[in-house]
Each structure stands twice: as C-alpha cells, then as structure tokens.
Amino acid sequence: MNPAPPRPPAGRIDLHSHLLPGLDDGCRNLADSLACVRGLLAMGYRGAACTPHFWPAQFPAVSAALVAERVAALQRAIDREKLLFRVWPGGEVRLFEDADKWMNLHGFPILGGAGGGRTAVLIDSWRGDWPRHCDRTVDAILARGLTPVLAHPERSPTRFGFGRLLDRLARRGVLLQGNLRSFGGGEGPRALSLARSFLRDGRYACVASDTHRAEGIQDRRRGLEALADETDADTLRRLTTDAPRRLLNLDAEDAAGG
Image 1 (spheres, rainbow, N blue to C red):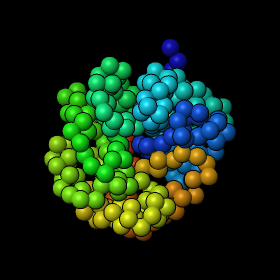
Image 2 (tube, helix red, strand yellow):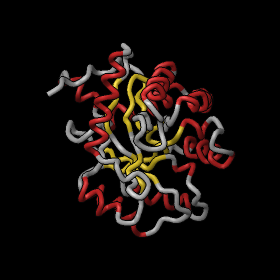
Image 3 (cartoon, one colour):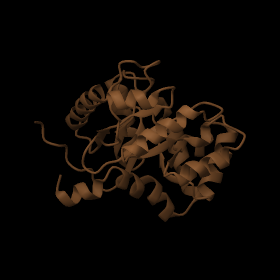
C-alpha cells in the first residue's frame, strides 16, 4: 500500500475542482492540471478535493474507483514537481433522475474519500425547478449519515421560491458552497447579486474555486479578491480554510498523525 501523502501546510483548501486531466470538462491534460495547481498555490491554497462530474449521461466512465486512481496519479505528478499541494478524491453529483439509485449501486463520492470520519457529498442541479427526484437524492445521502453540500446555488436558473427552497434544504442539513468566479462577476450580474446576498445572509458554509482549466485561474483570483473585499478576515478564513478543513476532517487527521 502506498503511504498517504504528507498533510498540507496551513492554508486554504479547495472543496470543488476539476483538476483531474481528461476525465470530464475540466483540465485537458496533466500540464493543464499542474498549471492549475500552481495557480491555486499562488492564491494561498494548499490542497483540493478533485470533484469530477458524476453524471453518467455525460461522463459514463467516471466512478469512485477511477477517481481514486487518477487522484493518486496526479498526486505523484505534483510531488515530482516538488509542489506542496495535496489532492483528495471526491465528486460532483448531478441530481439526475435516479441519482439516488445510482449512488446506492455505485457508491457515494465522499469529499476526501470514504473513511476518516468524512461525510460531505457535493451535489449540483441546473434545473429551473426542484423535482421530487432531487429530494430523493438528498434523502439517500442523509440516510447514510452523510452531509449534502449544494454547489454554487447562486448560479441556479431557479427564480421563483428559491429562497424558500434554500431555507427548506438548510433545515434538513444541506450546506451551500459558493463559487469564487461568481464573486468576481464572471458568472454574470445575477450570480454576483445572489452570491453577495447569500454571503451577507450567512447562507454559505464554504466557498470554492470550481477550477476547470488554467485559463480560468485569473477569474478565480479576481473572485477571491472580491470576496475578501466583501467580508472580514475571519469570515474569509472560515469559508476558504476552516470549513473546508472541517468537512475533510483534516484536524482529526492531523491529531492522528496521518
């Protein structure tokens, strides 16, 4: 068994990224992945969960086993470059019809990988409504004792009753993850307005980069700068460092020396 990579030094942790080369619509090749890692390092990040799309209609090859294999390969490449950056497995589960049955059959892509007390599962939806199958998937995640984390709600096309929906999800234990690019205006004025509103109202549990390719790093940098301007240092640290570390259970890992 290969030893675990060293724990990342103090710094930001990215809970949502598409760094694995050639797996979904993210990085195209290893050079692209390493360029993204260097960009994230320059922004103060010291690690990232690799969260390719779990959406069999679009990316049928993606599985938890393949992600774990590709994460290990990317970590080896990062180490060869002597970059102090750690990557973990994960996934971004599209709330498609029967996503609950698919995960019960194929496994739940837990952020950071199964075990180690980790419980977070990243989900997303691009529908303009919230049909029953979305609730079924949330139910399936909660029934396993896991924590659903809804990615970039500020980018959702849902318009009517969206605040009430988010309130209902929050009462059930669903966390919200904002995108840096939204804060920089890269997702348009509506996403920027909603991101500011959700930040002001304390809806976000964390904010992540959702990095796809090296040419998008500058948008994420602008978003991080805008987020820093929008809030205080303690909130910025909570959203980009403390909460991601907690969701990956890194403090417990540190205490165990693993």
